[in-house]
Image (tube, rainbow, N blue to C red):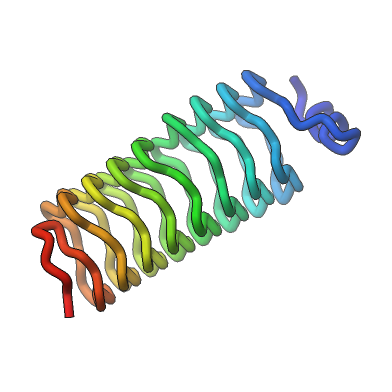
Length: 184
């Protein structure tokens, strides 16, 4: 499917684009509220600034996708592939990303407050300056992640793997640490 066809059909009221293939498609600043992209192939697509509020991306292939400054509140996903994606500055507040593979993803400055990142692989990810306040990071893999300047107040890091993570200037007030203690 071509990008313009998807946008035309969306504007006409269609929301189900399950299994669509838009590899390296350009949906920059597109309004895709409530879109169903389950199983879609969007590898390398440009979704900078897109509004994906209430979008469903279960089993979607989003590797190397650019979602910088995208709005993704209440995003629903299960097992989406997002390895190497750019989500810098994206609004993912309250999204369910549990169990996702977000290894080596750029999330610098992203709003991940109250987001479910339980069991998520964030190995080597750039989370500099990200807002992770109140986020569920139980059992998350944060090895080698860069959390410099991130806000983790009241987040739950129980059982998280933090080996080699950069925690400089990280706000941890009220954060439940991997060993179960609560940071002052």
